Image 1 (cartoon, one colour):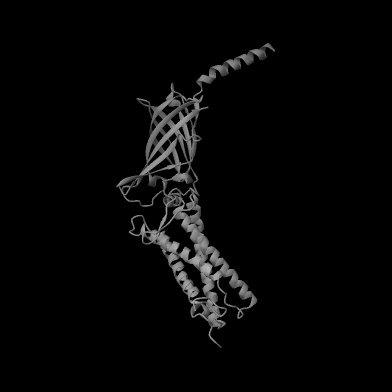
Image 2 (cartoon, chains in turn brown, orange):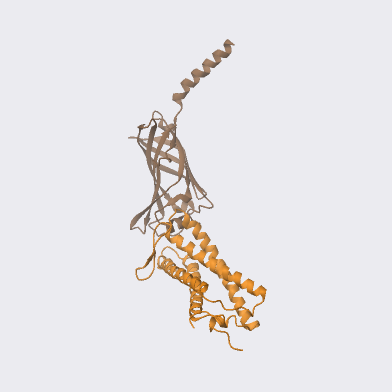
Length: 192
Length: 183
């Protein structure tokens, strides 16, 4: 009986000690849409065409004291591509571009996160798009974090990366100025 | 005679029939070709614009034609067997239904994002229904049913030629010349 009690108190002590050590788990705020996945491609080399993915979800862990232990994972509904032009979006969903029937989900999973100066972070991870998995590097920075006015705790990041369309099997010829797409990620997470 | 009679089709029905047959065939060929165009083709933006404008004119003409058909006497079909009469009715019903479905799905591809379709001389067909993603589903319906339309039109043509050359009955002449030849 005494042994059992001792064991219980040791376990309780372990949980009390363990809780603050555990990195904060965040869920990306898609419900309130304080997150966006935007892209831009040069149009003929004359301007930037921008669009976004309306539906995605993800989680990340982030501990200010140990940013290198952070992890992020995001799933994107490729059919939710939105460039504010129905006929173009139809084409982007089709086989020549995102092929959303074959590949309805794109995923990003971080492999390593390296902190730099001024809240900067270099996020290396695997991006799976259109069935192709490639390692990409996202130049990110922490924008801010803290208590929100509604009893929660939030942390947010911004990141950019550039993808070569052909790396993901997208070979439809948009002209020599339009072989790459820039991604801009705005990620605000609510700590669980 | 402008109106249809129990003897044959009037000028308006015949004109609409043959112009629509031509326009639908042209739309199919134009559509088939335009989706193969590369991004740098000079026709990449023009060909779909023509396709849309002609399609909307066809939608208006099909509506007029259906209204005209419903408000006119239908020519009698006493030269047909019961089976032929039933098959013809089914074919005509299917052609109307599927052509309307192709036209409406095509309209939705171009207007689901709220944009209008540009007709000629500055006229526009406005967007009546907007929903994100509808353009992709409509595109699939549009493609499949346009092939179905051409297949049905082929059967319809084959049947008309069979009546004309094998049965030697007035099925085709009453759509071409109007009233049946007096025997």
